[in-house]
Amino acid sequence: MLVAAGQFIGSKMVTAIFVVAGAGAVIWFWKHPEHLETIWLTIKYVLVWMGCVLALPWATFFVTRWAVAQDSNAAVGVMLGGYSMADFLVAWWLIGSMAGLGSLSWAVLLLGILSAAVYNLKVCEYLAERAENGV
Image (cartoon, rainbow, N blue to C red; front, side):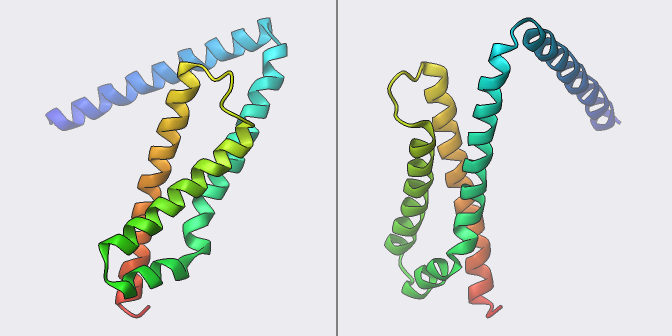
């Protein structure tokens, strides 16, 4: 009963936050239309980066099989480090350079790289399970 009440209240709070944030965004971009072009460019770059991050471990599934065959933590570390480096380099290329980035931009970039690293780990675990089971 307590869990259901918490989920109900939590869902209402999240809905209220989304409504207020959405209304704030509409008002902001109505008052500042020049920022709309900048935000769309940023969204485009984020979507391109996310597409690269999502596709990389699946497109290079053979690297995971190689790391599993090596039966070495070092091989897995090199594989995951390489994936994370590739994700970082794509982000670097899309940003253009790190000059002029503020602390919020650095924090978002770091959060994105860490999220991509966790995603790579989970996908590689799944691919390794499939490789070990012969699928």
